[in-house]
Length: 112
Length: 115
Image 1 (tube, each protein chain N blue to C red):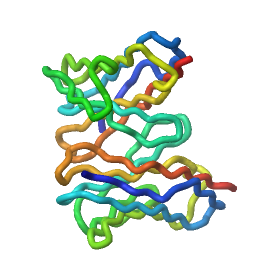
Image 2: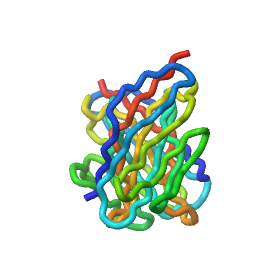
Image 3: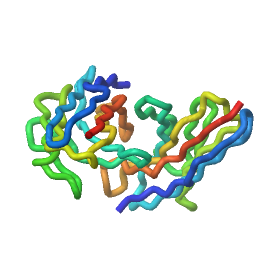
């Protein structure tokens, strides 16, 4: 079945630092890949997505590239802000399964 | 994008009682899903709510414990029955819009605490 393995947190960074959150997946076929973000006290929001190999999703300064050869979808941001403090979830959907499968989430805290 | 409203946003419940969570969407959607997020954990799919038919439950979840209704294309309810402290979680409604393939939208969740 489908699975997502995500970098364990928590991750603590200073403002303007570079962020990488690793995500790898296992799936049959060609799934779509997503990063969702959950700010404190709020529901999940889609941050970015990629639907085929070599696609790059981007939003709010965050980027992730769909790498089929390494089955990865790492999230990056060049300069994080305090307002980026949240839990980030990597997820996939498709292949042989219509369900959205989530990683365990990574808590990011950015200090001023 | 779909706008999803969930009620209640939070509640404190007594052991042995049941609570129904409502999910209202501002547009017609094909697929609606109910997820559970236990404290400090990721999201686990409970069931897929199908309009006009019974819900499809994931392994480990049963209809007697989590009955679901889907009377139309914009509304669904999830009931958490005979609650115990282990049911303390955030319950999230999620929808897929027909014209946006693969992307799911989430409500803000219903945070339940069972004493």
